[in-house]
Length: 198
Image 1 (spheres, one colour):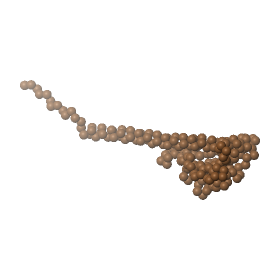
Image 2: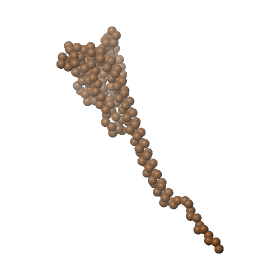
Image 3: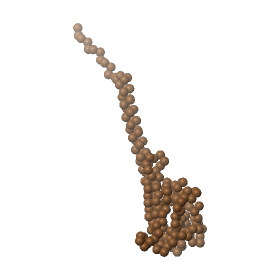
Image 4: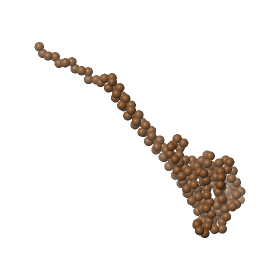
């Protein structure tokens, strides 16, 4: 009589092996998902800050063209107004028209705005030139001097804020503008004082 082969074993896997494989896969997927979410947040946060820095750079290039040809810069405010605004003014000439320019930074809303008035004309509305800004003393005037610069200089020192969900610190930016039409005898009192600082 011939010997019979032993019955073949079931080629499947046990329930315990399936549960272990599912557990390992779940842990790996959780780690991968967390890494992808973190990379997305990091990229988004940096993109927002980069866009704000580009916006600020563009704004200050425009301001440079205006302040560079200023004849006089006012003494900036030394404290924020009750509405949270910091102010500075300057006079400039475009073509044959003289303008009074006013710049303010509202630290409550984080918005920098500018308005101007032609000599003998009406005051324009506020135009937002940058946002997501902060500062403790954004505007500083350096008077013309024989020992330093022979022209007035306006220093603007602000921070570009990170998103509120970010743990990243805001980035500080300092810009210096030289009023090339100012002289050693230029005074900063009474410059565009009729524009008011609301």
